Length: 262
Image (cartoon, rainbow, N blue to C red):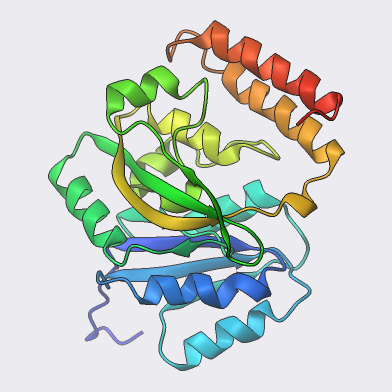
């Protein structure tokens, strides 16, 4: 390494994990490139995709995009992949962009960085989203509480953050152990842990298109997801409001999933 060179760390690391999402990957990356804020790096952990994900990443690297790309030799699952990506992030802040989602607000990073820089007590900042299907058609909207106090009242009853909308402080995320050991809901668990270290905030703006793949959710996965959601909630008794209501709601969700009613 040349000692005369000065290496400047990016302010924001954009964390992306992916698995066989080549069909959507370029849309996601292009939405990052379109941001007016440009002090970022992209960290991609590919969980052993069998499609042309690596070729797409390589094309972006050829045109000078700053991408740290790791392809797992075998499928490690979402928790290990997310934590691996987190360990590779060099920025003060980590922003999430899942490989099938699209940032639609070109000011997203700029808004969130300015808010985080000016409010040291904030640990996590998200926003609202439009829901799209596999063909990018809008099928709904997701609107959450905005202020810390209101988010805390609701967060056990319903997750108040969309993963691809959030930005959080990397140092604190690492201090609390990163993503939890859940096959589903690892991001929800991270949000709840972050909330023990500082304040929450959601911007009122629609920041992204969040893609849903209903055809890929099997009955078995719905039951498993409902059980894991309950497991997350059980860890926060006495920490957040409405614990017992949230627990009952989670049990009901398991029953409905088992009966194939959701």
